[in-house]
Image (cartoon, rainbow, N blue to C red; front, side, top):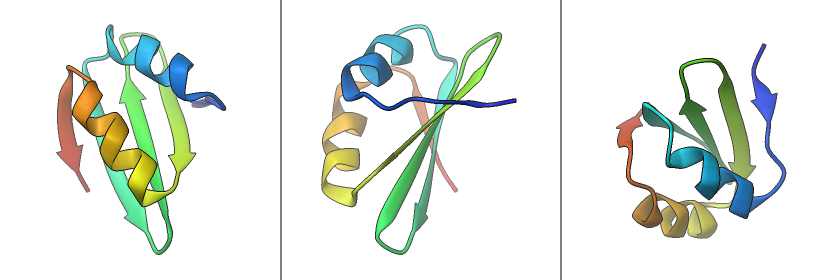
Length: 64
């Protein structure tokens, strides 16, 4: 089961050990899904915050 993240700082910390990040854009929200070796973490945000977060992560980004 995926785990939902509620904080940007936690998302950035988890992105350091993630394999990749999948981005799913749905109308006015963006879902960011971090895949680690053990869990899938999801984070919902608005498009502006998503673009800022995607510039700061170091793992591969896959657009869906």
